[in-house]
Length: 471
Ligand SMILES: Cc1ncc(COP(=O)(O)O)c(C=O)c1O
Image (tube, rainbow, N blue to C red; front, side, top):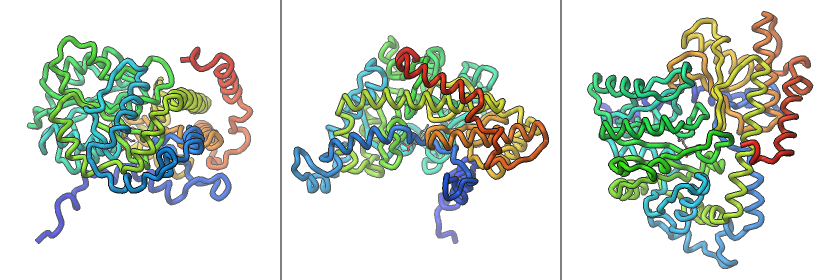
C-alpha cells in the first residue's frame, strides 16, 4: 500500500527541466572573479541586481522602516501580532499607487481589489484554484516561463495547452494560433478556462502590441473565458514601444462583459529586485475572485514586517519615481551591452524593450535543426564555455536554437567576460581551433574591440542627451 500521495511521486513539478538543471550545474561550480575565475557564469536567473544601491541608500536614510519603529517609537509588538489576511491597508495603498506609477498613471487601482500573495508564484497558483477545476486547461503562448509548469499545474491539477508562436512573426500571438490551441484542447477533451500571458513577456523581453491586446480581449470575449496577465516585468520596460497594461485596455472598453474576467498578477521580485521578500499580488474586478483569493492567501501571506517596511518605501513618491526611472536606465544600458556583445560574436537577439534577459537566436550554431542539437549546444555552452543560459525547449519554444540569456544579475565585468567567452566559442567553431573559452585569450577580449567602442559611445550619448530623449 502506498503511504505517500501522488504529488510526492508525480513529476509535473518540472524540476528535471534543463532550466533547473542548469542552476544545479552552476551551484556546483559558480564563477567568482578571484576564487573561481573559470567557473560557470549564471545567466539563467532573471534577477535584478542593478539598483540595490538605491534601495540601500533609502534604507540608510529611513532607519525607522526596517527597525520596527514609527516616529521613533517601537511598533515591534503591533507587527509581531498582526495576522489579518487582508494585508496592511497602508501597504496595499502604496503598492496600488506604485503599480499606477509604473503604468504612467494612466490606470487607477483600487486597493480593495488587490490581494497580497507570497510572490507571483503564489498569485498565479491561487488564480488557478479560483478559476479552474483539476483537468481544465489554460492556454499559454510559447515560449513561456518554465516555472509555470510548476506554478499552474502541479498542485492544482490544471493543464497547460501551448499556443504555438513562431520566429517568422517575432513570436507574436495571432488569431489562428489562439484558435488552433483552443481546438487542440477541445480534441484532448480539455475544457478551456482561460488564456495566460506574461506582459512584458518572459522569456521574449517584449511587450504585447495593441493589436495583440485587442485580439486577446476579443478572443476571451467570444469564448467566454478568463484572461490572466502576469505583469511582473511591467516596471522593467526601458525602451519604446511603451508598455500597455490590460487594465488600461479595459478602462477604454465599451464591452464591459470581460471586465470581471481579466485578472492581473504582479510582484516586487523583478521591478524592485526583491524575490527573497516574497511580495506579490492579484488584482481583479471580480468580487468573488478577490474574496476567495484573499481567504486562500492565508497559505502564503506576506509577513507584517515586510509589509511595513515596503509601505514606507513605496509611499515615498520621490523615491519610487526616481527608482523606476533610474532602474530602467540601468536595464537599458545592460541590455545594450548584451546585444552588442553578442552581435560582436555574430549572434542576434530578438528585438526587445523590457525584462531582465534577451531571447537569443543561436540557430546557426546548431549541428542540425532539432531539439537534440539544441541540448547538445546547451551542454557545450554550460560545460565548456561556462555560461548557464536557458534553452528554448525549457520554455516550450516550438523552434530549436533559441536561448534566454539574463543580463541583470551580474556585474558589468562579469557580463564582459561572458561575452568574451561566447565570442571565443563561436570563433573556435568557425576556425575549428579549440581554445580555453573560460579564460579567453587577448584577441577575444571586447575591451578594445569596436563593440566596446560603440558601447562607450552609446553610454556617452545616453548621459549627454538625458534618458528621456532616448526612450
Ligand atoms: C513571468 C513570471 N511569473 C512569475 C514569476 C515568479 O515570481 P515570484 O518571485 O514573484 O514568485 C516569475 C519569476 O521568474 C516570472 O518570470
